[in-house]
Amino acid sequence: ILNVEQSPQSLHVQEGDSTNFTCSFPSSNFYALHWYRWETAKSPEALFVMTLNGDEKKKGRISATLNTKEGYSYLYIKGSQPEDSATYLCASSGGFKTIFGAGTRLFVKA
Amino acid sequence: DTEVTQTPKHLVMGMTNKKSLKCEQHMGHRAMYWYKQKAKKPPELMFVYSYEKLSINESVPSRFSPECPNSSLLNLHLHALQPEDSALYLCASSRGVDGELFFGEGSRLTVL
Image 1 (spheres, rainbow over the protein chains, first blue to last red):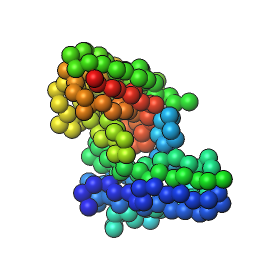
Image 2 (cartoon, rainbow over the protein chains, first blue to last red):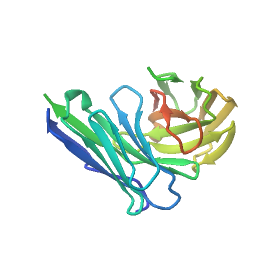
Image 3 (spheres, rainbow over the protein chains, first blue to last red):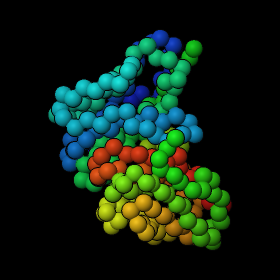
Image 4 (spheres, rainbow over the protein chains, first blue to last red):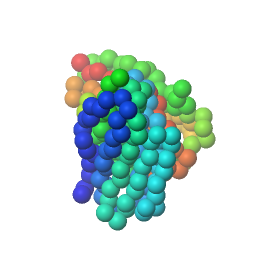
């Protein structure tokens, strides 16, 4: 893997559904894995920054895991709400560079 | 409310114009970044400044010229741009390189 890849590109769920996204990243020059939430017409905001293999972080209904050996991270949202609708960006940092994936666009229908 | 302020929010310029994008933060962060983002594409890293020195230039064309006058300010000078340079330009800062990024809301640039 040479780039940061995210899947799916977009996701439509119903309010109350739980969902998860995947981020794959190159293992070379790795320092940290970031997740950002980006609402339309606002600035991206950090959700999590993880550095250690096996790291798990949680903020309310959102959690993330990190596997640095195989180069992937999962973001989970439990009981999605309409206000969770946003683009979720994953980024890998190392060697002075933070490189982003294209994001997963989440739409939560009430 | 973002603590990174970008101006202007929108800019329309011709290919012969000279303009600048500005970014300001007062969080004491020592690393500042410019990213370019086109629709449905990842934000692309352009420049990284660390302690007011240019650390990374991702082979950006010389028609984009960054400047870091002090630790709080980051400018992007634009000259002789092409229509394909139309994009959202995001500024970010962090305490140190590789750390959590704090973003501005971006400057939407249209080149006619």
